[in-house]
Amino acid sequence: MTQYYPHLFNLAIKSVKTAGGEETPRFELNLYINNKKAAQVSNGGTGGSCMWRWENKEFEELFNQHIKYLDSQGRFEFNFEQGDNLIYEMLATFEENKEFKKECKTRTLFILKDSEPGCYYTIATKYSPQVKHFLIDKYGDKLKEIINQRF
Image (tube, rainbow, N blue to C red; front, top):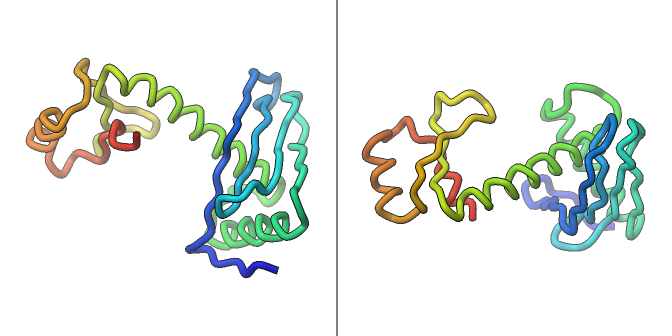
């Protein structure tokens, strides 16, 4: 079995398909562990748990070790369906970045350190080194992130 090392563990989602949902997000995606396809995860969006189709038992065990590690770090609010909750978080981040990527084509998006969670600012100018210097000069230490730099 592959050894689990939290600081080297890489979790990613790809091939994401979403379609609304009644009580939970409705989706199908591929889960990758350390750049290898580990599972197909889906949810019908009607409030039930996620369906997990693991490529092999080793990936499932590594994922469960990762969940235990995250739980020991206080990551989860509740002590049930933690794997599902992690997938929902990853899905939300994926969808957010998809929208940011579209916006970043024509605007500059940034976050200040005192911004409310989920809030960001925009400049109706395409991002460039000059815009970066302008933001740094104007906001200095108050600048938390220029979202365009993610992409």
